[in-house]
Amino acid sequence: MARLKDLISRFALGLGGIGIALVAVLDSSFIPLPGVVDGSILFLSRQEASRWPYYAGMATGGSMLGCYLLYSLGRKGGHAFLQKRFKEKHVSAGLETFRRHGLLAIVVPSILPPPAPFKLFVLLA
Image (cartoon, rainbow, N blue to C red; front, top):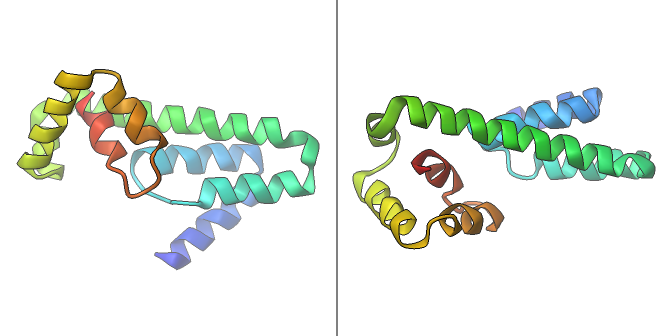
C-alpha cells in the first residue's frame, strides 16, 4: 500500500492542481489515501507560495466530487449497498445518529482525523 501511495503522490505532484483534485476524488470516494492530498498541497505550495489558494481549492473541489460520487452510489444502491460494505450494527448506529443529530452526523466525522468513519456517514446520507 505504501508503494501505491508513493506512486499516486508522484502522479499528483506531476500534474499539479489537477493531480491534487484527482487524488482528492479517490481519497474521498473509493481509495483512502491519508496524507497524500495534504502533502501534495504543502509540497507544491512551498515551490510556488502564491498558488496555495489554487491547490487548496482543487483539493476541496476534488473532495466534494468524490463525496458526491460516493453519495450517488449509496443513493442508487440503497440499504443493500450499505449491507454489503458495512456490518449491520454500524449501519444501525449510524442511522440512529442521523435521526438524533441530522446534519451534525456528517459535519463532525468530516473534520475528525482518520480513521473516523466518514464514508459510512456519506453513504447513509
